[in-house]
Image (cartoon, rainbow, N blue to C red; front, side):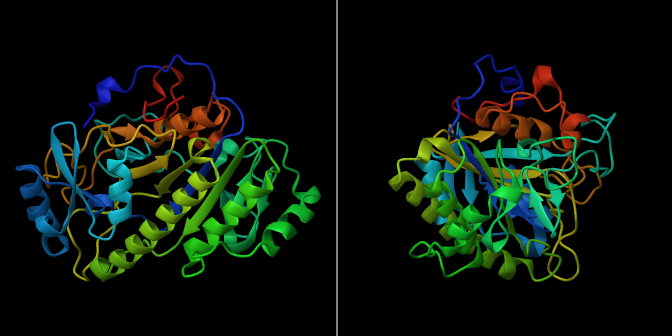
Length: 353
């Protein structure tokens, strides 16, 4: 694993070239990433099993990988993403979360309302804030709503003048093999838009519901992760076949992580810092970036005594790294991030610029 101190130096390379695409897979409800990637070495795994209780995954069921000298395991239903990690196409960014204004990670509690990672647009849809034109506007300027609830933001988008594009995407047959799940249908819509090539840079947001796992979590998360794994592996293969792997980056985001300790209904509660996945040909994969929490309930990284991790990397840093690769060099004009964005220490180094 790469230490946070090694990542927080400013990136000095020039801004990204055009013709780049980002796809945000937004896991609605708060993804419990404590079971998405698990440390396998002692004493970290031992702390995990003590805190997770009935939600703990057996060590021999986890899909092992290395980051530096440390061993980790992906959830058993993420075999394709584990393979992409081992092929250096997938990275994990550890313990990201929203820093509230005027606070740092030394504070206690779970005040994670400092910024939002998404922007709401009319119709109940979400969009990537830093990609939408008119960053100070709360309306739908610069955002198209596509079939299956996908949103598209790009420089030069005029929703009133793009009806033909939306209709052509809607008329495109679903990519072979993608019709079995809603996420597959959504990513097929993204592929149709990529093939249309209407904009030099494009930022898609795909909402995936069901991650509010406050009960029956083990079964529900197994199904959710299996769907995520199949769809992302197929999507990466599809963009690779199109020769676009290096120009398309997929990343996960969510409202918050969930508590390490279980509740009384076989689920977990809202928490704070959690782990994210980044996939693409420009990703410096095969590594875990940032500082993994200790997983010791009541320990130095626990804000509330129930496995609520104080983030070691702000969501603004995470977003700024992806935005910079895309071509957005500054987030100070984006209200959703301005409160905690620091231009001198804003970007991590999980992307090849």
